[in-house]
Amino acid sequence: MRSTIATLLLLFALSATTAHGQSTPRQTGTTSPPPAAAPKPLTKEELYQTVARLDTEMFAAFNAHDVNKLMAYFADNLEFYHDKGGLGNFAQTKEGFTRLFTQSPDITRTLVAGTLEVYPVKNYGAMHIATQRFCHVENGREDCGNSKFVMVWQQQAGTWKITRVVSYDH
Image 1 (cartoon, one colour):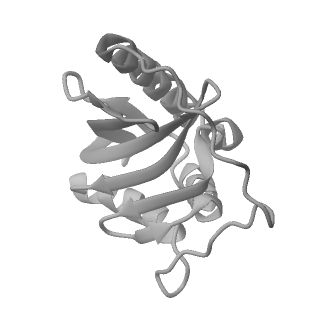
Image 2 (cartoon, one colour; image 1 turned 120 degrees about the vertical axis):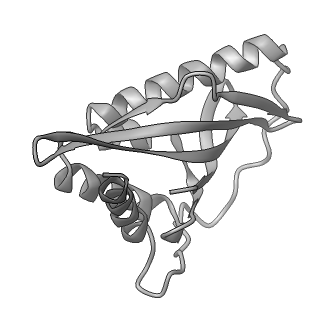
C-alpha cells in the first residue's frame, strides 16, 4: 500500500518539474519591492501556535481540494524540492496539486501527532518541520503513507507565505 501512495506523491512531484527536471522562474514584474521592515518577533509559543494554525488552515484547503486557496499559502518565488521529483516552482506546484486531486479525488493529508517542530528564522519568519500522512482509498482499502517535510515561512506585513519546501522520505 505504501508504494501506491508513494506513486501518487511521485506523480505530484514529477508534475511539479519541467521535462528536464529544472524549474522555470515565475516572472512577477521587472522591479522588486524594497525589503519590508523586520516583523516584531513572536515568542516561541506564539510562533509555534501561528505555524500550527497555518498548517491546519493550509491542509484544510488541501483536503478540500481547493487549489486556489491552497496556493494562497505559497509565495510567488516558491522553490519546492522533492526527493523523488526534483525542483518545482509556483506554477509547477499548482499544476501538480491540480493533477493530484484529479487523479486521486479522495486523497487527504493529516499531520502526524507529536511531530511538529517550529523554529524562528531571524528577521524572516519560521521553519516548519514535521511528518505528514497522506491517505486515499484503493481497491476498497485505505492506502496511506508518511513523508517528512520542511517548510520555510516568510512573514511580511502580518502575512505568512511559504517560500521553500523540502519534501522527503517518500
